[in-house]
Image 1 (cartoon, helix red, strand yellow):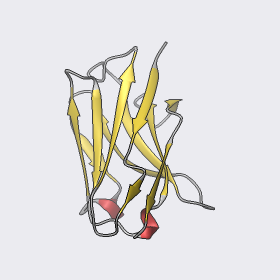
Image 2: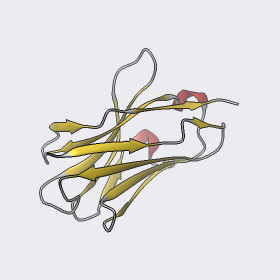
Image 3: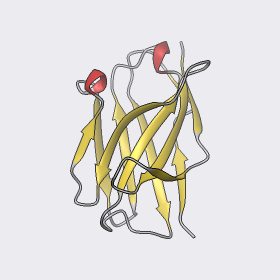
Length: 119
């Protein structure tokens, strides 16, 4: 059974960096054709796709976040991490990891983790 688990900081100060790590259990993040996705949902708003990494390690992000976002992975731990720089209160959201089957269909989700940006 494939599971995704998010781990995040909970609370981040404005202008600091948010790091969200997604651990994948039961499947390899290097297995084709899957992509691994980070999505967030700000309070009272809809889901927002932030970025993704494919099974080769190539990553790509939402255009509006490209200057603040990067993704890395640790294949030995089967984890991928999203880094979001210079956070503001508008980055407050529940952050989710998900699996993309390669055609923008998200078939598996983590439970989500709340991240609040506040001083």
